[in-house]
Image (cartoon, rainbow, N blue to C red; front, side):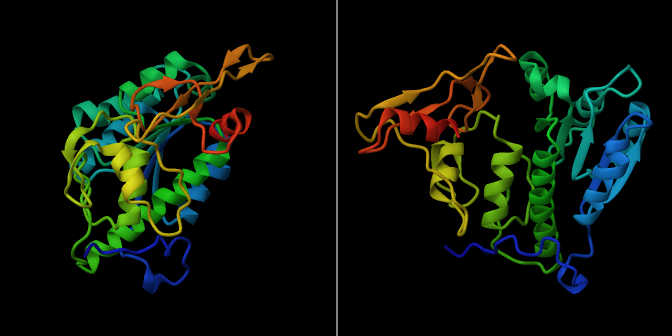
Length: 282
């Protein structure tokens, strides 16, 4: 009950007095001539208070990471790669397996990896936290990540007590709001069962569901995951097929980390199957 709570409110604040001295760090790997990175991605990161390093070759990216030793980059973004000189997953696997970096949020920005389930699974299984080719989704995550990191760094500088520590990656000085977002963003695929909650210290069966349901921050709209033990209920399962792409829609659910399912969920009291199916799919 005494946890320090603060909504993520310092994002895009132009008053430097309200920002931490230690800004978030980012590393971008991209092929030469990739205009989207130089024209859009790097300026957006800098606008969101990131200190950005950029490289064209995987070997140079590894060198920069090695030089930092335990001072992890907060964010690393790379393409799937066009040749063996700029392979994004080669860099991310180096970060995860060689340097043992856990706190770094990693992103593969790739159309191929986004649309191919085998490529997505490979990237996730080897250390990627996000896979996208959608610029708006990328910007949304960068904005949220910046908010979490700026607030965390400010908490550390002001020596705020009673903050949260992520028991998976040991990221410290997180507010409840920051911890809630950090957990779902960075550890949504981890199998975390029968462990202590970093907020209330209770031993819980499924940490993902517990955090999502019991520690929803003020001002955040989120539909709670239902417990199967509550009562017998109707369930809507949805098959979505795109006739142009000839592909089916699968979703990654917080209840079952590491797996993909057809969209679906509990039908609320008084709700039709069609309305429930539409709501769950959205």
